[in-house]
Amino acid sequence: MARRHVAAFAAFLFLLLVGHCRGGKTGICYGRNADDLPSPDKVARLIQQQSIKYVRIYDTNIDVIKAFANTSVELMVGVPNADLLAFSQYQSNVDTWLKNSILPYYPATMITYITVGAEITESPVNVSALVVPAMRNVLAALKKAGLHKKITISSTHSLGILSRSFPPSAGAFNSSYAHFLKPMLEFLVENQAPFMVDLYPYYAYQNSPSNVSLNYALFSPQSQGVIDPNTGLVYTNMFDAQVDSIFFALMALNFKTLKIMITETGWPNKGAAKETGATPDNAQTYNTNLIRHVVNDSGTPAKPREEIDVYIFSLFNENRKPGIESERNWGLFSPDQSAIYSLDWTGRGNVDIMTGGNITGSNGTWCVASTNVSETALQNGLNWACGPGDVDCSAIQPSQPCYQPDTLISHASYAFNMYYQQNGATDVACSFGGAGVRTTKDPSYEACFYLDSDRKSINTNSTPPPAPSASSPSLPGQCFTLLLPMLSLVIASGFL
Image (cartoon, rainbow, N blue to C red; front, top):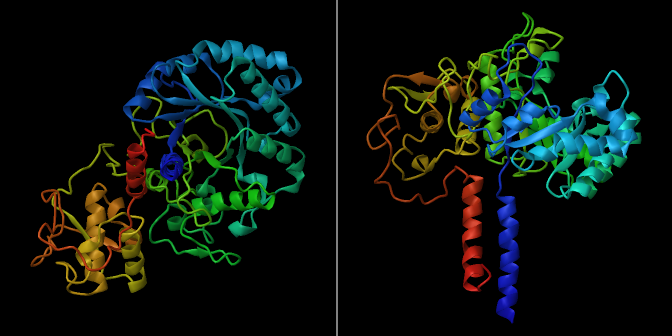
């Protein structure tokens, strides 16, 4: 009997860990406010070619929904703000909409989320009182169809829903939104739905470059950490700070268990003359680092290792959008489907910004530490490479081949090069905020070999280091280590 109890507990832990090890998801926003866009069928093929598994659209256009049938792409569809009045007034309106726009195409098209309203606090027409009644009517319609456990309902918000976002621990919702916010949060908790928010570090940088550095906005490993004076937590990027400001705002209202989902984030590839940060290089850097952040389940300082799902804005440049130049240039692709820049959606490589092709070799180049930066910059880069950068730094541990000379610049050079070679051997992968420089001279010496495109393994004769490696295992590795003994016990007990 005791053995069965132990096995039952192990089975429970196994299932719990499997859920925890799912990993964050990265999707794309497919807006259509542009001329000469490809047909939805062509867009669906493009998305599949990019190995993108999650897509957000902003309505329930039937041609788009049909295009994603049998693609295994999970679709988030939307109820526009203009429809909130009709959806909130009469249940029959929602029932008819579901019957005509969703049911004929589900489950061939894998619709997993419905957003009811979008950034309603930014709407020129006050529709805030309509959103929760509309959400309830959508839920009622889904219940009639037996889909309320398969399709999740929420609503998206801008960061403007906060009255304060800095420091993150002081994050607070604008009290003028309390009339709809509290019932909405209660609805989300009751239905296990996420709080959806659109976050744009670009605007924080663009609006206040003297206070928000470009490195901080782009997830650069060389950004100067910002300390929250209330918690002592250190923030190395604006994205985490914005996410945690939402978390603390939710916690202040006693909704700390709500999952946060980022339904829009990204970086413009082009802007007006004064928008100097809007470039393809910066857009690629932001989104590449974002994907790695999500895939590695880095979490945030307030919620480390917390998985978070994000949708990158956007798939295409949209020339019909009003506003400043950058508003029309957030896309990964032009309407003719040519890549403006490319992304590695696995989060484990890099791409050539000019050709859009994946880079796997260094072409006879290495990345070493610069002699023209401070020791602090080198140490920060070394710490990042051997930590979040997921570099195996065992070779620079005591008694290992690359430990001597025991200098910061030597150890940083080794770590920088490992990161550089593992992540596409591009300029971005050797930046380290200016602490890394590329060289065509092989920096290998004696028994210390620096990886390049022709060396697929290194230090094959080295003995295990006496001290732990400075690199930390990835989340999948940690999960496997935890799950294996649990699984063995469960199988031995006849539970699986």
